[in-house]
Image 1 (cartoon, helix red, strand yellow):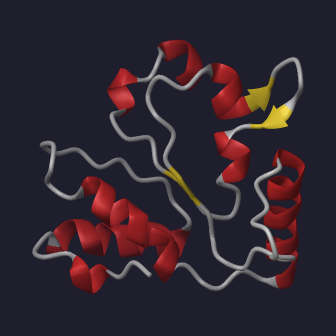
Image 2 (tube, one colour):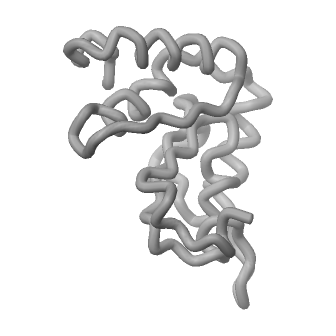
Length: 127
């Protein structure tokens, strides 16, 4: 399990993450490669409140429809963390396609969607 105690330094960004998580806000992290943006983002779901039964059911339904429900698990109880690659297609991010499936945005429902290297994503996928 990820924990913020593993992050050395970065006091300001950790505090900003706590504030954003507490208020349910979006967050933009800017920094050099290797400064800890991904490490911090991966820990955000661990500071969010436990999902309610209704939230668990919503996430479980999305993962079940996508065929991503882990074997032997009937209910997903941990908030999702999704980090799609910047080359991801519009359909893989938003969903849809010939065999319509939920995209990364839906898979991150009630959790965290981390768009690393945001500037590298196609403008079409971000608009």
